[in-house]
Image (cartoon, rainbow, N blue to C red):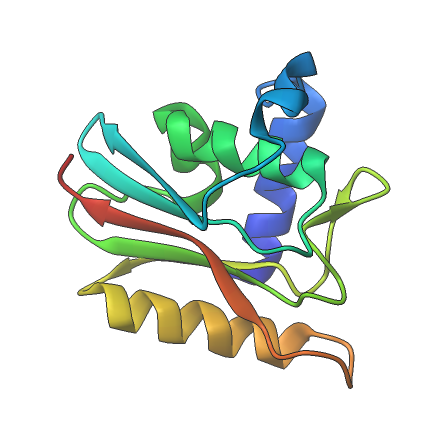
Length: 142
């Protein structure tokens, strides 16, 4: 499952679906969460301090784009999804997804999605460092 996520993210990045823009300055003082609603989903982005500006921009584009969510998470209209990351490893480094980046979907509720993503991340992260955290959640609706 984690390998499918990494491969999908590599493909989305290579295809240019996620484009980093010059708007980074607009989010100099971000709130703790951003919520995106529409296209059959409610997406919550948790803005952790370890995320780089590039990672935040990519996560925002995933949150706002049904096509990117479908490519990375699969169908989420009938279930919950979450992405978890290890703070010491981040999300995208040197153009590639971190080994510990974990995305799971199709879960019955938010708690199950969070727990599954966290477990997959913890199982894949390098030893030591801070525990994995959820950075993005998708719920049906919106």
